[in-house]
Image 1 (cartoon, rainbow, N blue to C red):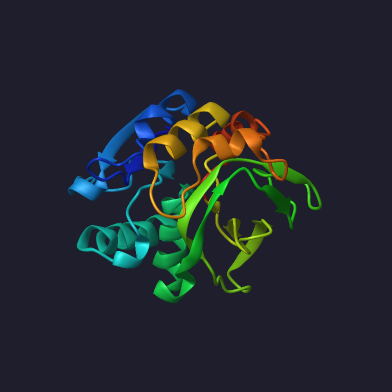
Image 2 (cartoon, rainbow, N blue to C red; image 1 turned 90 degrees about the vertical axis):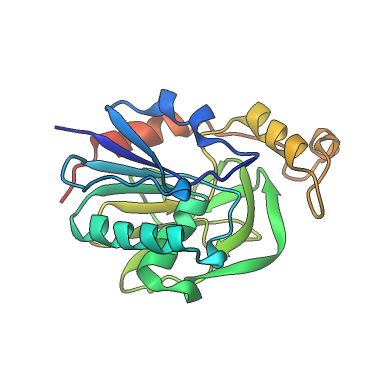
Length: 230
């Protein structure tokens, strides 16, 4: 039976609340655990798929709940589960499997709708050489994945690893918030504010990389659900 383990990484007063975006996109029954608050499943046997969400937390903090999540991710990968990590979830997969040296703090955040260049054909993201757009908002980034273990799927002009997939497992990490459209992205920018975060008016006036969304989330999630565990 197909069932999704939904790992919610949102922290208190997080401007990004995963439950506002992901549930309408889930085609299988799911169980929600807010792991950042210490909620954990009893085991993994009931689940075929795992979704790991974004968060305002920094993966570099390496808190106790992050260490516990890393252990769970390792177990899930070993068990052959179908896994998709988004934003913080993308970074957590890299940190869990490749160590803290696989993530780092950016000099400045990448915020907006950059051109996302597909470097290697992927069932979820499409053909090599294509360009797509989706919302990104991150202060940390994945910076190192071993070529013998994973394939870098996508990059932008400002981030070398926007997505990767394990070579021998149905496990994806994706930095962009494909689950959010342009309106939702502007709302997040407007709520976040702070140093290095552009005012929403910037996106109404910019001529280079203005807000553009490829609408990839529906085919992406369809393929995610159709992928079988190994």
